Amino acid sequence: MTFEIQHTDPNSNARAGKITTDHGVIETPIFMPVGTVASVKAVHFHELKEDIKAQIILGNTYHLYLRPGIDTLERAGGLHKFNGWDKPILTDSGGYQVFSLSGNRKLKEEGATFRSHIDGSKHLFTPENVVDIQRIIGADIIMAFDECTPGTADFAYAKKSMELTHRWLERGLNRFDQTEPKYGYSQTYFPIVQGCVYPELRRQSAEFIASQHREGYAIGGLAVGEPTEIMYEMIEVVNEILPKDKPRYLMGVGTPQNILEAIERGVDMFDCVMPTRNGRNGMLFTSQGIMNMKNEKWKNDFSPLDEFGTSYVDKAYSKAYLRHLFISKEYLALQIASIHNLAFYLWLVGEARSHIQAGDFSSWKRGMVEQLGRRL
Ligand code: GUN
Image 1 (tube, rainbow, N blue to C red):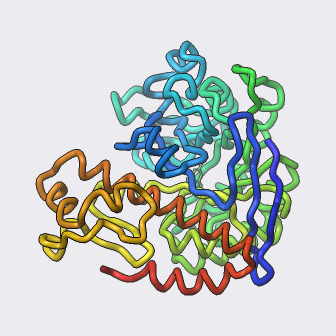
Image 2: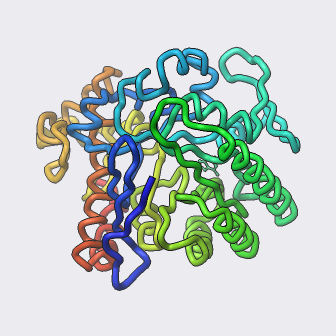
């Protein structure tokens, strides 16, 4: 994998770049649709590629390991062959999913034991076997096994948790460096910065992570219960230290406004379930603000779903029709909303990129953030 910075914004830390993987090029800043179980919920890959213009999608080690299981993925020849997505894939390590199972998991030095949310069976993830599993899944970018420290953790817990993540990182990197990709294309391993809401821990973690000299770095443990302003401050602290010539991935973030603020602070890659999950609940993000499609207000509004939208669904369907589909609990509602929201997120990061290239990112961003917050 290589990363090339093509433009930097004169008034902020925003940058436009190009990541090249064996499955193709990713233009940054980029949003990665979440495909937890080898599928981006309710969206065909044809739409993802041709209409939404996704360049990379995400998979989840935890979910793929439990179902379909690594035996099936290995027999298929890896996830790209299994699901037919031939562009880049990034897999999260399971650190976040295991953390979300709070009642059902136990952390120890060796790794994390957890019970499957599907059948209650017991499993162990270690920094080493999570590398092995991600080798079999065959993602282009694989993630370190970490503890995603809750945003509400006290300093002592956050420090202990960060130190465990660092020890796990060294073990994971050892395994990664001693093993080979299984399917003939290269894989790269991103370490993850933790440190909760404490600037000195974030600094320490960023320095440790940067000293591993890898091809890209992730910032974890944000948007997990801390105030938004603190999240922005932590991104600033970390990006002061992470090398400027490597891609930076902010994990699990966020709203369209969060993404623009993070781009301004030097982040290149994003993922979040928000466009798909909120979309399935009837919430549409647009450049003019947010719409709740279940609202009575749209009952007889036959205007296009989003007159400024870039997806075919934006012109093909009206607000009144989508509201009707949601009220009638039709599957098509989930499809239309997911396609619209993902196309909007990809449009937003593409616009950010164009404005970085044009040199007017900051002023464009200020206006856009204001518009995005409106309720339509
Ligand atoms: N997704 C969102 N936040 C995190 C994190 O801190 N770690 C991992 N592994 N995944 C995440």
